[in-house]
Amino acid sequence: MDLPHCKNCGTPCLVDARYCRKCGMALYSQEELAELYPDDNGEGLEFDDLYDFETLKEVINDAVPENFKELTIERLRRHIIRSIWRQFTGIDPFPSTQELIEQEQEHERQMQIYIERNEPPILLLPRTHGSYEGINDLERQYHLVWINGMVRHISLMPEEVEYIQSIVARDYYNLEPCDCDKVKYVPSEINPNFLRKA
Picture 1 (cartoon, helix red, strand yellow):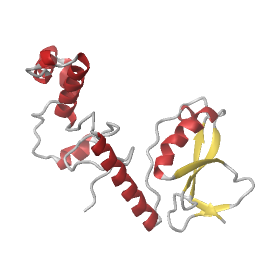
Picture 2 (tube, rainbow, N blue to C red):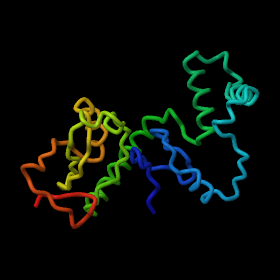
Picture 3 (cartoon, rainbow, N blue to C red):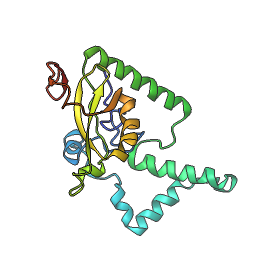
Picture 4 (cartoon, helix red, strand yellow):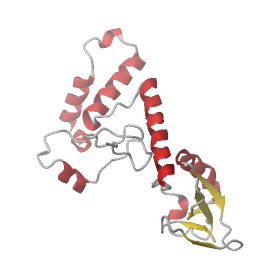
């Protein structure tokens, strides 16, 4: 059985996790959470509860270990951050090297499954400057090309290309300038959301 994966970074997630342990993105909408956890009466703490000063003090006091005097300031900070983040998300914000290696191996395994199925993974990209009103005349069209050659259009500001390229490369995508004026593309038979060269 495949583990659920974060739609943002592709990290495999624990079945009961609500946030991605790598990028912190919410794995489910509030409606999906209500369906997944119908018996959850909201008894657990949420980040919004920290607006109450007494709750905030209680959470921090619970996060400070009894042997705090024996720890360096940096180790104490890490412990408090880890404790609070785990309490609210169930995710360790400081995974071990072994956990990072396992995450990367799992990601590679999932990418191989996508390649075998000839099915590009879904990308959730950060909102770019070109997504905002009034800047559209400065953005350029690029092709988001997956490893099998399937193409999708994306609009970016020229200065965003390098940053977005670093994000999409992890999922075997590449950015190229749009050449639709020179080359004919038709909808892909495999995935209608993509194009292929005619």
